Length: 158
Length: 135
Image 1: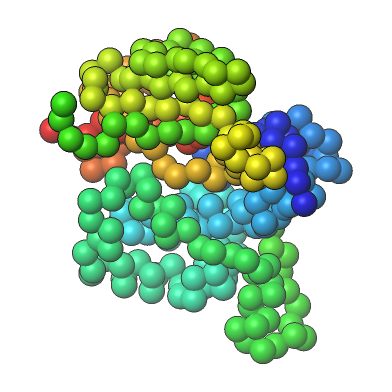
Image 2: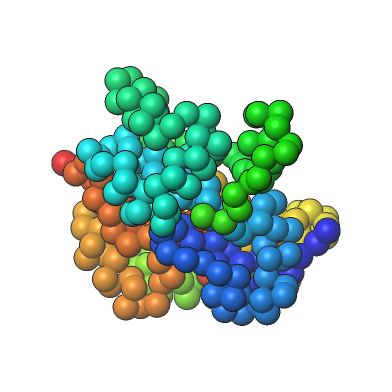
C-alpha cells in the first residue's frame, strides 16, 4: 500500500518528536497536530508507515532510554522510571520485564559487567541498535510468555 | 589523483530544495550541477573536504522504474535511509547557527563520554548526526 511521501515526511516528524521527548505524554491529538493530520487518521497512517502503533513506538523508546540510564548512570530505579515517563514504578518494572525479559535491577547488574558490545560505533547509534523490537502488543507478549490468557492485563499505554 | 571513495549519493525529493538546504543552510559548496533533459547530476562538497562529493539525486526514471522510484521516495520520507554523520569541531556552535538558519533538529546537542552529538534531518527526511569527537 503506497503512501504519499509528503504525508510520510510529516509522520516522521511526529516520530522524531517522540524520540526527542519520549518522557512526555504523546496523546494522538498532539501527534496529529505535529503531523498536520486529523486525530482520526493519525494512528492508522502512522501504523501503516512504521509498522507499529504510535503508543507502542513510544513505549519502545521509553524502554530504550531506561536501559541507557540503567547502564550508564547510578540513578535509582525509581528515578529512571519517572525520568523516562512512567508515573508508577510498578508499571515500569512490569513493562520493562515484559519487553526485555528481565527486571530493571537484573538488567543493570548484567550490563554493568561486560564491555561495550559495539566498540567504534558512535554512541548515538548504539542505543538504537539495542531498541526493543516490539512487534506485538506488550499484553500479547505477556500472554505468550505466561501462557495465561485469563489474567487482567494492564493497559499498554505507559 | 588520490584513491578512495569519491561520491556517495543521497536520495532527495527535490534537488532545488536540497541545494537550498545543503548549500544555503549547511555551508556545502556545489561541485557539479549538470542537466540533460529531466536528468540532473548534482553533487556538493564540504568546504574542508575537497576529495569527497555528496550526491543529491532524485529517485526517478530512467534509472529506476516508476514503482521503485515511488518506493524509494517513501523510504526516504520515512527516515529509512542509512545513518549519515557530519563531523564538526563545535557541535553546540554549529547547532545554534544551523537552527537559526531553519534546520530541523531531531536532537539537541548531547554529551556522551566527552563527545557531543546532535541530530537533524534534511527536508527529504535523511537523518544526520552531527558529532564533535573528543580530541
